[in-house]
Length: 413
Ligand code: AMP
Image (cartoon, rainbow, N blue to C red; front, top):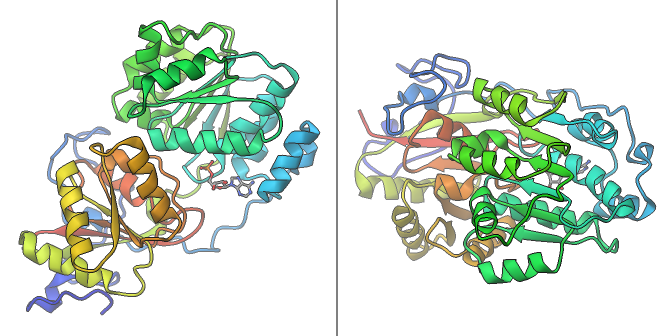
């Protein structure tokens, strides 16, 4: 048995994927959902929804054969050099299919999961156009989380290296005065999260009337996170003849509605392959009470195959406590949650990304949109509040064609 609990009831504690007596196998995402597309927070989620044998194995999907090489796009040489330097050889599917459309000036709807290379898909044409026409404040990129905004900014810096193009990151949790000073210096590109962008618009420090290209990244998540009003206001402050690039992993009726509202005669590129959840082996771990849960978790983590583990907890305090407990028990971990400053979160994230620690404990909000390669296991120490949160959580593993594993703690029956 792969995952064992040290409690007396070994057989029931944690079952490996495979045949499970008495539990009907269920493929999340394929079955009925309670309460339509939006589930009530805290509604009961049947444990069978946390069990699934990965149906798509690495290498099973034919590798995507792009119809373009990066050199086909005739990017300015300085940009092409930076692409080469990053080691990108072939465009990914979303890059292959959307870059030319964006360069032609179309509005584009990109339906792409995270990890598909969508950041470069929008950044490369933007940088190419900016190099020729260096208008200040002419690009606005809006993303759901600070971390995602930061990752976009890092990629922007890499791709625009030595091109004298500048970006400003406008996210919450960091010093606003510094951001105001940076805005006064006149960046070419503004990258931010809806809340802080709105704060600065309201204070009159951020004007969006020079925006020529607007990117809404992970629009579905921004909607999930309740940013719709902020986004509407932000978009309304930009000129109506702008180019809009809209990325989303899903196309729900409310997303379709938004694209009608914000985009003009858009071209749609869909590169969604199998749902991430199909790539993830999912199982439950039975344990009751705090003590037993902690003990079971430590037991799982002592297993060598748990190489890079993202553990989800429900509350900021719970996440911090769990991380402290793991540390005390000899399992080095970091925690990310909303009670930490932006720089603390970034430090924690980097330690996890760079394999300095093997375990990161997080809340749902803190972990959204993060690009963390090679997460071997997602462990739901506390159950997610909605099934949608569950799918987002397990989407942190099994990325880029890899098969991941997700384990969810449920009460012993
Ligand atoms: P994204 O979906 O934009 O978050 O990208 C996911 C990861 O894939 C990032 O680490 C990128 O640096 C990497 N990536 C994106 N496009 C390519 C490419 N064409 N070749 C190699 N790596 C890429």
